[in-house]
Amino acid sequence: MYDYLIVGAGFSGVVLAERLANGAKKKVCIIDKRNHIAGNAYDYYNNDNILVHKFGPHWFHTNNDEVFNYLSNFTEWIEHQHIIKSKVNGKLYDFPINKNTINSFFNVSLTKEEEVKDFIDSKKEFIKNPKNAEEMVLSLLGKELYESFYLNYTIKQWNIHPKELAPSITARIPIRFNNNNSYFNDKYQVMPKIGYTKLFERMLYNKNITLLLNTDFKETFGTIKYNKLIYTGAIDEFFDNCFGELPYRSLKFEHETIDKEYFQECQQINFPNDYSYTRIVEWKHATGQKLNKTSILKEYPVEYQKGLEKFYPIPMAESNERLNKYLVKAKQINNVIFCGRLAEYKYYNMDQVIARSLKLFKDLTSK
Ligand code: FAD
Ligand code: UDP
Picture 1 (cartoon, rainbow, N blue to C red):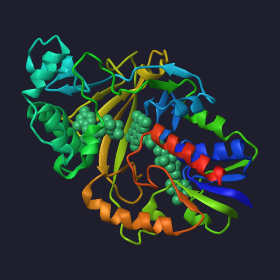
Picture 2 (spheres, rainbow, N blue to C red; picture 1 turned 90 degrees about the vertical axis):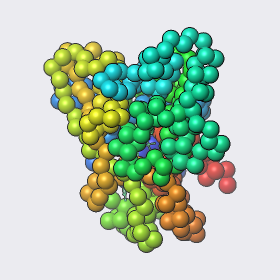
Picture 3 (tube, rainbow, N blue to C red; picture 1 turned 180 degrees about the vertical axis):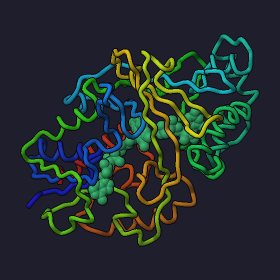
């Protein structure tokens, strides 16, 4: 008999397993239908001994001291500014858009931040409350930058016009009028020195935690005895899609090793307008590995269908009504806690799900 059964060994589930076992001496069983831990953050050394992320680039960034200090109990860090560029009309630009991007794209030579701001003020559209992902960018940067850097990337990524998507999607990307060229604004921009999977192994190292891989919750139903369930899988699946499936976006990954030291100049290059992949990632820039070979990843967005992974919830007004029905139903059942990117159907980053699980642990143990 376990105190808790946790479904899903990604960050949401493993942080709770670790906290409940170490912090509250609870007996925990954690299961995952995949053959590995770490959820979408899973990384491994490939045949060429290069550390790669199986499910796309996972760049760690947070402003949250508690999250950073918590993970620091299990790993040291590689200090690393996450640098990403965007290729438009054959030319590489700093991305997110900053002073360099603006000077280079518009062929101007602005120097002071105020000048850059004034220049963009003359380009941007006056939209008081942006209602969608397109209006969000138009209101901040105007048509030219929107059409070159955002419009086609967004369509490729979601197969939905930005007019139909929530403003929060494009608002994820900072906009700057100085030369800062980091992808994120956060205080901590790091990578775990030991890699994510090893970090997860350390978190799960406790005799009060039983880990079962290749174990689908639906197939084990009733065979594992527990008091409380923590569920981090897709919320619609939990309820057998009784209100219909929620929309998801999936991805296909093309991993490749190349016989030269480096392939490109930074860890990620985005291709808004060309090719059917959105980005090429080169791991060594972020992990600091020194080898003669290099591995890259091309990421292709695809329609979700049975047999593929649900990588992204799709933040759009159209799915809200259905989602709300699931959320109401989830509140009505006792002894089941829904948490995580798929269980809450929220476009969470890693630090956000970790913060959420740490908070849940406090709530569970303060009663
Ligand atoms: P997941 O990691 O999805 O884990 C859920 C687990 O539950 C999975 O392992 C799944 O197999 C398991 N599961 C589901 N259903 C069942 C079932 N019925 N039975 C048993 N097991 C089940 N965040 C960042 O901060 N920085 C980034 O750079 C970043 N890049 C990303 C890139 C991509 C391509 C994607 C898709 C996400 C990215 N993220 C990034 C987000 C990050 O992956 C998530 O925030 C995080 O992984 C969510 O953790 P989770 O535990 O909620 O979900
Ligand atoms: N985006 C874009 N151009 C880019 C990068 C991002 O238009 O070069 C938009 C796009 O809509 C994307 C969103 O910003 O879905 C969020 O991008 P992010 O890099 O945060 O996506 P993730 O890493 O979560 O896939």
